Image 1 (cartoon, helix red, strand yellow):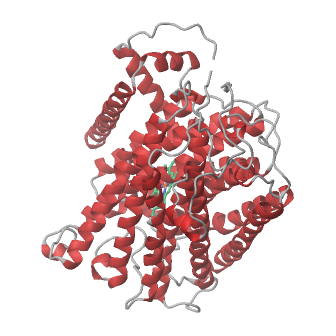
Image 2: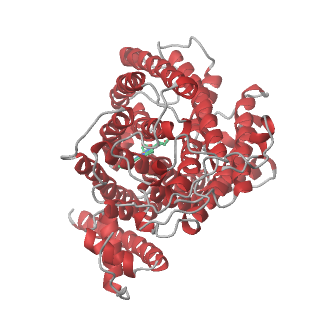
Image 3: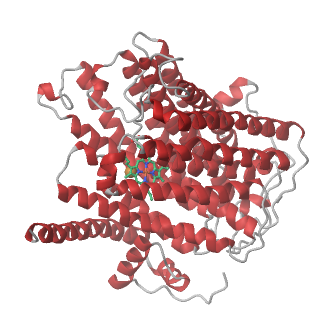
Length: 75
Length: 530
Ligand code: HEM
Ligand SMILES: [Cu+2]
C-alpha cells in the first residue's frame, strides 16, 4: 500500500472504544481501520475487547432489568 | 490488498535434501508442515466416512417407524459417536490440516513454529479415534448419552464412557497444541512486511479460532474429568444423590459448547472469503470489518451459552438475557453475509467448483443462522428443544456451513497441493448432488421438528413417516455423492492435468507464487512484502 507514512499517533480512549464498538457491529470504514492499525497495539485491543464484552453483558442485563420491571408493574 | 514479492525465495531444484527416513517412518517422524497437513486432511476425511457410515445406519433405522435394523441401545451409541467423531475427528482436524498446509505458505514462513509438537499433535489423533471406535466393542458398548454427554446417563454407563472421556482428553490436548503452533507461527514467523492487517483472511480466522480453542478445550476437559471422578473416585459433582448438581454439567458443557460451534465455523469463514474474492476477481469487501467482526464473535461467543438450556429451567430474567444476547451477536455474523455478497456484487464471476461450494455455503449457512435465531427465542425453543428442528439447524451450520467451506478449500488448493488439476465437471457434479441431497435430507427435518418429532430416538409416530423417508433417501444420496470427491482427489493426484503455479486467474497471495505442487520446502528465504 502506497500511503504516505504518517507517524503513528498514540491512540486515545475514544478511538479504542470506537474500534471495539465497530467490531461488535461488524462494520469498520477503511480509513478508520487504517488509523487503528497504525496506532492501536494488540494488547490494547484485547483488553478493550474484554472490557467491551463485560460492558455488553452489563448492558443486556440492564435491558432485562428494565423489561422485567415493566412486566411486573404492568399488572 | 496488493502483495508484491521481491526475489522469490523458494528452492525447487534441490528439493528433498534432508535425508529423511523413507516409507512409514517418514510419516511417523515428519516435522514438515505439508506432510503433517496432508496427514490431517486424510485422517479427517477418513473419519468423515466413518461418521458418515454411522449416520447412514441411523437414517436406515429411521426409514420406517418401529425397530428394524439396530437395537435402541446401539442406536444411541451411534448418535453419540457420530456427533463426537464428526465434530472432533472430522471437521476440526480438517481445518487444522488446511492451517498446516496454508498458513506457512500464506505468510511466507518456511514451516510451522514447532515442528515436533506439530507431529505429536497429529499422531495423538489416531489413538483417540481408535478409542472411540473400539469402545463399540467393549462390554456395555460405546458412550450413548449424546455428544453433549449429559449426566446422569454419563455416570451410569459402562467402560465405553471412560474410553470416550479419554479420547476427548487426547483430542483436546491435540487441538491445544495445534493452536499454540498456529498462534506462534502467525505472530512470529510472518515474512518481513506481512503485517497482521495484510494477512489473508484465512490466517486471521485461524488466529482467532486458535485462541478460542485454547480458551475452551480445558473447560471441556474439566467437565469430562469431573464426570470421570464422579464415576470412579467418589466425587458427586453432578450426582444429585450425593448433593451434586447435574445442571452444573450443562452450564460447563455449553460454556465450552457455544464457542466450540464458532471454532467449527470460523476457519470456514476464512476459506469462503478467499474463494469468493478469487472467483469474483475482486478483493474481499470490507476486509477490516471482517477481521473486527470475527474478533468480536470470539469474545461475545462466551456470553450466550444458556440458549441451549431454556428447558433446563431458569428464571425468566435469565431467559430474556440469553435471548437478547444471542440475537445481538447474530449481528456481526449477519454482516459477514453482506460482505460476501458485496464482494460478488459487480465482480466478474466464474463458477468453478470452489466458488459453487462457497456460494452454496452462503446460501445455506444463512438458513442455518435463521433457524438459530428462531431457536434463540425462549418461548419458541421450549417447543423445539430436542426436536428435529434443532437437528436441522445445526446440520445447516455444520454440514452446509463448515463442511461445504472445507470442500471449497479442498478444490481451491488441491492444485497447489498435488500439482494437478482435479476434474472440473466431476467437481461440479459433486457440488450439485451434495447441494440437492443435503437439502433433501435436512430441510424436511425442520417440518418434522415443528411437528414434534424428538431427536435421538430410534422409533417415531406414524405421521412422521413420509418426511423421514425423504430424509433417509436424501442421506444415502448425499453419502454416495461423497464417493465422487474421493475418486476426484485420487485421480487428480495420479493423472490430473498439470497445474500452473497460479491456476485461478483472480487468486492473490503468496501461496500462488510457489510452484505447484508446492515443493517440500518453501520460503526458506522469506519473501519481502512491499
Ligand atoms: C446466528 C447464529 C446462531 C444462532 C442464533 C444459534 C442458536 C442456537 C440455539 C438457540 C440452539 C439451541 C437449540 C436447542 O437445543 O433447543 C442451537 C443449537 C445448536 N447450534 Fe446454533 N446458532 C447459531 C449458529 C450456529 C453455528 C455457526 C453452529 C456450528 C457451526 C451451530 C451449531 C449448533 C449445534 C451443534 C447445536 C445443537 C447442540 C446440541 O444440542 O446437540 N449454531 N443454536
Ligand atoms: Cu449456541
